[in-house]
Amino acid sequence: MEIQVEYCGEGGRTCRDEPAGLRGVPVEDRRPLSEPCAYKGRRSILTKWISASGQGVWCSSTVQLGAAMLLDFDPEIVCFQSRVVKMHWQLAGRHGTVAPAFVARTRQGRRLVFAHAPRSAAGADEEMEQCVLRQAAQQAGWEMRALPQPQPVLRSSLESAAHFSGAEFAAGGREREVLLEVFATARPLREGAAASKLGLTALGYAWHLLWKGELTCDWSRPLLPTSLVWRRAAAAVEEA
Image (cartoon, rainbow, N blue to C red; front, side, top):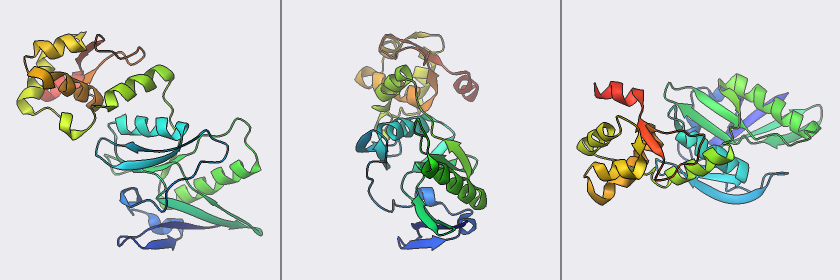
């Protein structure tokens, strides 16, 4: 099978190369090749997920939108983007294009490629898409993964926390220390924020620490202002 990968070069010019030529190329930092259209066979919704870093990530289905939220919440993922690569393939007179849902980079520098969620009855076209994506990922040095999906309760809770994911809600050094101390033992989110004596901004700071993973809760239950929240062990170690 012959595969060429389309992507944006450093100067913003559209390039094509063999998958092996993309080893180490930070395509997840590049601009999308185009705006999305509804992905065939999926529930249509054209929107952007605004990541905690302020980066807009195009999503073309509700499934992809939920996955974007999970990737943004994952502390190991430092950057991800959609529509930054497109695979053009040819085989025995047949040809087509395949676009993964996302390309991402981890804190360790590994690059991940996420395939669109399969339809309930996968046909020959979808099998070919998966084959093309696997071959391209192997040659480019990407790890191929299935698109993650949050369960309904977790999705609702993450949507609530994501309102406070932006840098404007990040607590300063002193405020962070106070909140981590307040939540050294589990207590209701709103009650702990009030107990910090940090004023009206305390609750937003606490929500942000939840999003960043320095505070945590029982994510299997709905996250409310009355939910029990506590400092993660990792945050406690960092403080020591």
